[in-house]
Image (cartoon, rainbow, N blue to C red; front, side, top):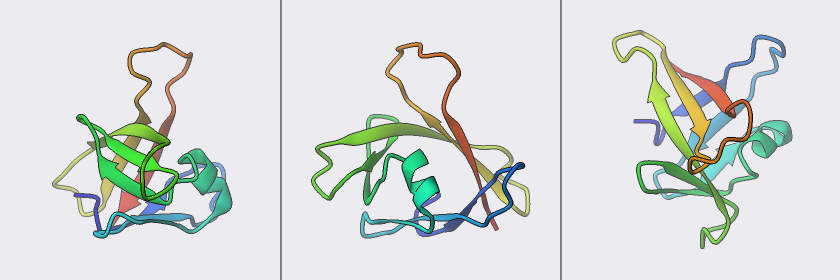
Length: 102
């Protein structure tokens, strides 16, 4: 469960530590403006239809939907993969971001 955990953005090229936290109150905390842009400048989240919606405000009028995968649930550090849900519309390479939780 990603809710309440501090997730560190995993980037092999840029070692700047960037974090994401999905609060139990529905708020999103993102430590860095560049990472915020990668995640639709989300300030809130909600559970969607088999997705996690990252919303621009508390009303979730505008949002992006993401599927979340876990690489190995028995590992000491969990690797979460967020993949943008395009609703079946092919738009080239998928948008995928990886986060580490300890």
